[in-house]
Image (cartoon, rainbow, N blue to C red; front, side):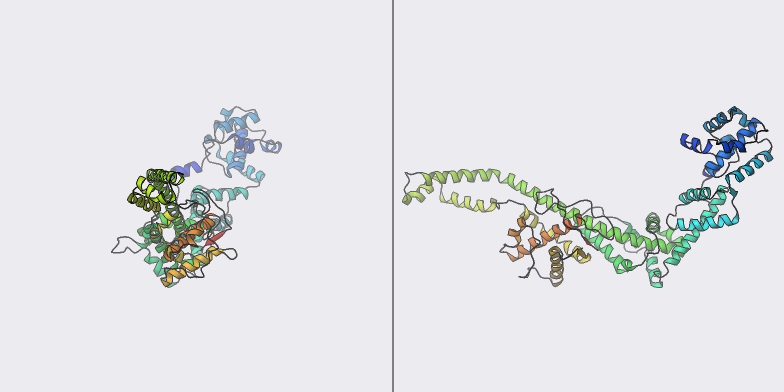
Length: 506
């Protein structure tokens, strides 16, 4: 692991004063109390008094005193000089004798109860940083935390290069500790499988790592199936059974991000103690992400089918508007004949046929069968027409995920039944099928449907939408939030949203 993670410009900046200090910090750290005034030498020159006071405030503020006091922001010099009734320009004459500044700094340390960092202090700092590195491994963050920690202990901060070495050592120890904590997982077979992630397949030209890194780009059935296939691979490798409770979620997340940013070659060049924990964290995070992704794709695909069915109904209404008007006119003509008191009952049919030819009336009746809609006029039949489209992925989806509910749930029973029917290759629902979960508006399509095949279609469609409602209403997957998009309620117009009791899948 490289020791130096800062550029020369960054080191120079961190070893000197900040370019600007906010007024609140100036007042907090550079306001001189009576006790502070008592420490300032009275018999020395104005320049020495100003330099002493500036070093006192600087040690409180930064935890160390930069070598070059000429880099102190002008606002700070003016603020301190006004309190001492000294001209700010006198600072230029301070420290002409190096011993003077050293003696002042020693006195200030004693007064503020600071002490220079010893080997023991740095060893303790390194051990403290190991625990931080097991949560957040970013070196710049560890550098900031180290400075704050030393300041809280009143230990004068050493040079920045020294701190870089301490942080590098702490990160190295954190890697070793991570590897040790994953020892039970990292068997010989597991290591071999992890190394296999980095092997480039001759046929596809890419590694398993690259395959798993690629996220879904659409919510089509093939993409849902590909996502489920990736998830099945992770479960087949036993990722869902790995115990990583000894590592913090932040540590795992950081390692997974390293894997997503790294190439095969970079990971292969890493030592085992670093490479294997990174790949373990990547697979764990990938399994969670793939589960969430599968649910989101399912939700989006189903919502799209649902809304397309709604649009199909509107298109159908527009397409039959003219024909419907013609049938109304025809019905009006027949009604006038029937209601005409001059037309005798025996002459009724002959009179109707005289005004409307039998062939025209027969065609109108057949056309009415095509355009007539149920009294509730929902678009469930248009959704059922997409059954084959949904079947491209719904069997694999319900087989891959285990749905759960608090207490007995008819919907969960329906999911289990469909899983069984798919396994047995049965296309018709059994007689004892539970239908309690079917909303009232769907019941004529499911409960009273004379066609057993269509009955199964509607049953499975309402089950799919119901499962999506369950996830949107409070379900969760592997500790993650439910999908943000929610399918419409089965018992409301498009866009409606129900919130049933919390359910979930795993």
